[in-house]
Image (cartoon, rainbow, N blue to C red; front, side, top):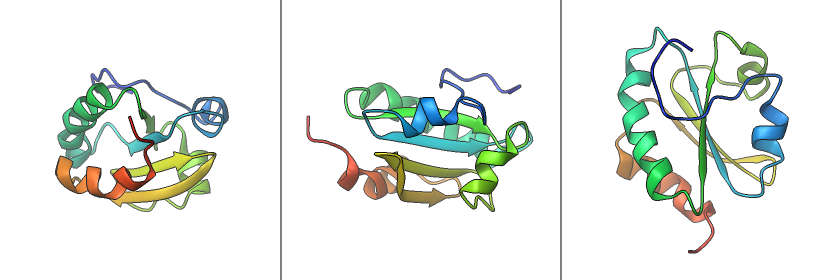
Length: 113
């Protein structure tokens, strides 16, 4: 992916190991280099990843470079953030949203500290 980010990247090839097999919830940011709202939400997700690192992993997947995963999970718009827990999607946030809105959607699925 051509955008600079500190978030780990996953791909169609590594998605199962990176996300589905994770022992902690994983927030997957379906994104694309050409997407301005995606770039707007990245710093929010980087902050969330840092502050919640004990309870959550955050990864990005480029929907253009790795379309199979986006298609498999019915991603129709970018950015789409899907929270996976125990290999299943438990929450989805579509569009660039403020941190409070993202946190409100995913908090019920995170383990207590």
